[in-house]
Amino acid sequence: MLKNAIAAYQKGDYRQCLKLLAPTLAGAKVDPKLLLMAAQSNVKLNNMEKAAELYARAAAVDPKSRRMLTLLAARTYQRAGRQAQALRLAREAVRDGAFDIEAENTYRQLLRSQLCLGELEAQDAHLLALMKAGEASAFAVDDPHDHIMWCDDEALNARINRMHGGTAFTPQSQANRRALPHTFGDRIRVGYLSNDLSDQHATMRLFQGVLLHHDPKKFDVTLFCYTSDAVIATDQGLRPRYGRITRIGDLDDAKAREVIRAAGIDILVDLKGHTKDARVSLVNSGLAPIQVAYLGFPGCGTGIDCDYVIGDSIVTPEASQPFYHERFCRMPECYQANDSDNRVLPPPARRADLGLPGDAVVIASFNATKKITPLTAKLWAEVLRAVPNAVLWMMCDDLDARSNFTAYMGDHGVSPEQIIFTSRAGYPEHVARLQAADFAVDSFPTNGHTTTSDKLWAGLPVVTRRGRNFTSRVSESLLTALGVPELVAEDDRGFVELSIALARDPVRLAEIKARIADNRFRSPLFDTERFTRHLEQAYEIMVDRRIKGLPPAAFDVPRLPLRAVPFRQA
Image (cartoon, rainbow, N blue to C red; front, side, top):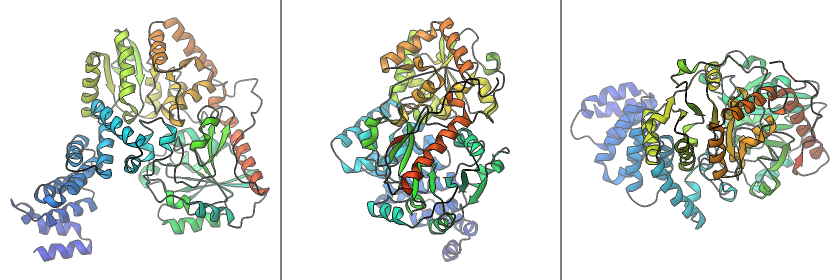
């Protein structure tokens, strides 16, 4: 029977393998190797929760491999969406022996997603101390995206070396790419590389307007797409209008490189950076004479071979250049593209329909829960304690995370009645409900990015404070481009005082809301066509330098004259 189960596993017949193993697995004592085979069969069949249970059973009966199997169980529960179970096992893994990079990585991710903020604060302080002491292993624990969720020290951000999706480029591989023969044509050939090509994805909600506004007389645009079928299925009609899409999702890096190189791309724009399912090794294989990092990852793309990173004078000031291997291409107003042509603006939802009190000051937070750091929560708590009639209206789907957050805020003097949780919603519904709040509070160090843009589009003021790295300066960039820089406080104390002042001054708040609504179709932030012309200027400058044989160098894109009339009617 066992031989047949092993044979079925080796043939890839995982259902038959599990069927044959079932009588043995029901026993009290099971060989851990059989438990492992059953777990892996369930993984292949996408039965993640069952696989996690089996990994945990194997850990319990295999002392030599206990830590590895416990961690595997934790990660599989994490994939199954059972975060509380995953965290329980991750805690066991980090406590079961010496410092282990992989165990620490999973444990920290789960602390963040579960809003275990007291525990997380201690872990962040410990890891920060190791980094400042120069402990090499500390820089491999968090991936770059997780690291910027809590650390705003650009010098440390730049030293993170954990890589997903490939291996880091080298000076030689970069030199080889730049030395490849290339011929420029009459039009600039731009290739965008992404796996987010659906009009319901946050990245495309910002960027798709650029694709629709590119000047076809000057630019030949190709989208190199490795978007999953599941994400493509969410598209509601704009994807077919994006232009030429070349799908490379089923191709390995070598084949994908051949396809992209054959297209003769002048500028390859990586829209992913260090984000989910990025193909770092593909970018680093040498796709174009000019490679650019944009939008997906708000920081230095450590290990990713890009010549330029697109920013602006706020998110990428000159003082930050030493912490980047990319040269700064600074947009004149705001680095963030925004599609105002295809963005819905429904009427406001009623508070009564949203379960919100009609007589309270409603302070919104719709940033991802992983952005809510202990510092963020403490600042929010100060505001709520000072304004007893205020409520924090917060997006959080996970019930355990809600409970953990409520307990933490209770420890900082905030009653449960001052916290109202809500879940994700469809985009039109989300924009409608945002308008029911009085104002929003940002998260630190990683601000709202698309979420701040959504709030401003809905006419909702966002209170933030100045940051020390790209990801912590995004809201300031957006607010400045919209003409409401007074919503940017200088520091933590200023953030708390400004939030309290707005909560107590409905007249001032109404004036700011009116200005946001008026500026929405006048200021540069949501002027898609204007942004696209600036971006095209940037591409022209990059190509001109390359044709002249000049190396990449930092530059500022010249500002176009301001419009005399609104670019869109309300």
